[in-house]
Length: 88
Image 1 (tube, rainbow, N blue to C red):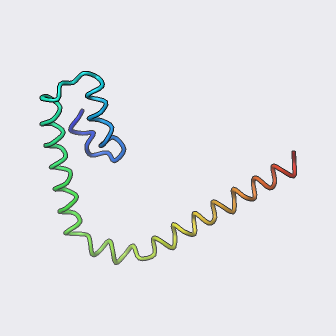
Image 2: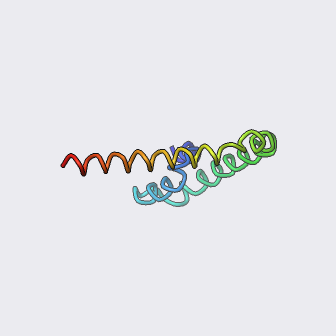
């Protein structure tokens, strides 16, 4: 469980803390967490080295899309609040 949790972004930082809170001894948890973290880092680095430039070239439009979606979300939120205020 500890080893697989290193591969999920949200659980990567929480799992060692939860294991400690559950009473898993550090001498048991530490080697598993370290080996899993080394495997995760190695995978990310190798993928970045192999696909990094391709992703960087293809994702040049991503900031525009993210900003557009954020702007759209703000407009929808404003519209819904205005509509709720005028109805109530």
